[in-house]
Image (cartoon, rainbow, N blue to C red; front, side, top):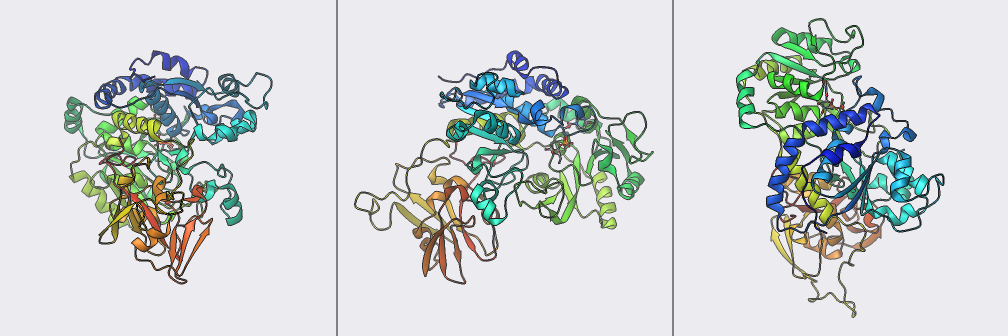
Length: 567
Ligand code: U2F
């Protein structure tokens, strides 16, 4: 059945349910953004008219909101606790609903069991029949619950699952055996999923899929009004919990010399001691009122925490400049408590690396806050420059609909992959000794043009650009330096001897091993390593010992998740 876009959110609001502050927050957001989603739906409907859009049966099980997982977030919704996750789940269910899929939402174990068909009262009884869903979106908590309450059958149905995972999971951590053997075991990882079944809040690593969320969009009148009403010396501080202001007196005092400082810090009865008296604190605001404040402000300033939240995008979308600290050395699970135990070694180079790397100046300024001269002169610079509101396409409703549509229709972790290389019955490659490739040298990048059309892959093989990394460099960085992006789904096509010779690596020996750096070349031993386990294909891995073979691809302007021919 073809899916039909739907803009009426009545049913969706009912499905989200009641009884928790987190659900009320999500419903307020869904209502507030309904018109924006509706107009995006009209535009995508026009664009996708001629595309196959199969209607899927989708279950959304929000594990972290269930009582069974402790639900620590809901009681903090009105007290300055994290809202980023709620923002994202609200937008995910809206996108799935608007795309016209058949949606069920669960926020308790009982609902989960009811939907998947496990009889009530028989908690750990495995689901024996077929899974009544094509796709299940959940999180790490939900995954654990499914394991406990769907028993063994989870293994069978695993390929239908997508895990919403804010900060991302790298392949080395996801692979149970490998993680245990090589020190990548954490509280969260080891589910042996495909890396791209994990879906993140920002495009942290291409090993995972980028799900994202949306921010408010402006019409022409609003844009004009914002420009007219900007107050050049008004700053809003990023941080709705008092602890985020702790130890920042010096910066606040400097800032206060130039600008009027506003905050939205939650408080009970008295001003929190962390927030100086010269700050105009509004208390935690409803999202809509925060937007109004951001429309007037010139500067949105972060002091290092929270990491990687939605608020800076909202500020930039409302015409603020986002000023944030650079982290040197970068923060990661190896050196910072917040990231410790998270299944990733990703190096976080500033409070908001996406803002730093994908947006940048003039909207985002990332500096060393300990250099007081630089801090001071940056504030003065900010007061003197004019910037326009900006929102990357991938964070608009239209961009999110486009991306989620593409994932739903094209990502397939259930069908067995056709073997590669395609040896025929006599053991030779079809098309002669060089196989199905024509190698087109183009400086260090080789375009691999495939003339065997029976390889269906998504992204399509035509997008593949083969590249060698430098020693110690990851494929994330290697592809980035060629203005491309690493594409894990294409690793299997370059995990062959021919790829080494195409890059002029002379292999003395070829070994096949479970190693998250492979395929890679070791100069020391002139050895070529191919990957034995496809689950370990990793864009993120890097090692001083290896030059990695990287499958890069192009991407759309403002929509890094999709290659040019991906739609
Ligand atoms: C991030 O979570 P946070 O909730 O701390 O992220 P923020 O960027 O601060 O804001 C989330 C939303 O809170 C809203 C604002 C944002 O959409 O509009 N808000 C509000 O309604 N009223 C206010 O006065 C101030 C903000 C991140 F998203 C999580 O994934 C992480 O767990 C967390 C810790 O790093 O940071």
